[in-house]
Image 1 (cartoon, rainbow, N blue to C red):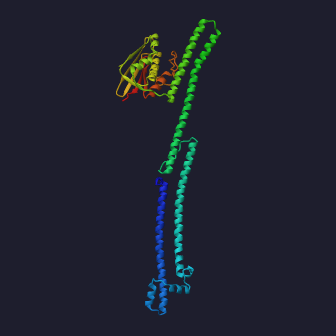
Image 2 (tube, rainbow, N blue to C red; image 1 turned 30 degrees about the vertical axis):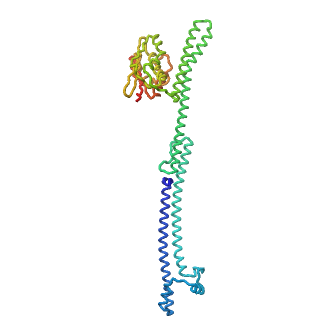
Length: 409
């Protein structure tokens, strides 16, 4: 009886049951009325028969016996046939039967007509409501086909029809989500390609210029050597740009699966800065590691090292000769924090809210080399592992980056 969960069907069934009940009551009433009429007509017939027999001076006892007798016989049937009364005779010749028929016919026809009108009206109302529901649903589904998801299918009742509409609504939601994902993917690819094209334009133009200079002075060893070095730097920058863009694009696309485990924090830090220690010595800068070596961090060692390395590299880029980069960590019951501080140039207030944007370069960073992807990549890596990256800085007072990870219970 699951179809009764549908409100319209339930009300229609209630209407049918009510109609049948009323129809039966009306039929019983008509039967009572016609029974009373038949009794009156039978009494009038018996009265006429008794009156006729009394006028012929037939004994009252005989008349009473005749009127109350229930016995039938062949002789009685033969006598009635003889005077023209039989079961097959036209009922119109029997005045009492004809009168009874005439009195019953209007009542029966009226009850049938009224019942038909009520039943037809209720059925039409039910079908009209169904038609409205189907028309509205069909219009909404056409909107879904056209990509318009601002309207929704009726979800105000239970029943098989509404369950079907609910399933269609869920399908539409999935299609909308897929369309949004496809649109965002296209926008992301468009933006990424535009960014890569823009960033490659400068080093490629420089390479073309260096190559023309070398071609114009092939015998000048100093010129060839100078611009060969510049070509190497430009190629290195292109490689760094492409590698960084590939990594950050994979992170944005969700194709990176972080292989997290418990690692010694000191090992994570040392692996992250292993390629930067030589640079710090050459630039007369000091990297100081300060923390409890036994403490463990639940993370992806390779990717976390990438993030730490990018932040340390950024600190080296913005710290003068003799500067210090300090790396420390601490563990609380709910958080594990790694702090990377430097005593360099600091970040201007107008820049601090933009440093995690891709390719963002401050107007004060003209003297530094970079593509503006190190910090956005570090942020994407940390957030991809469920942590977050924050920064505090003052101009000429240095900068502190804090990598925060939730402590695994």
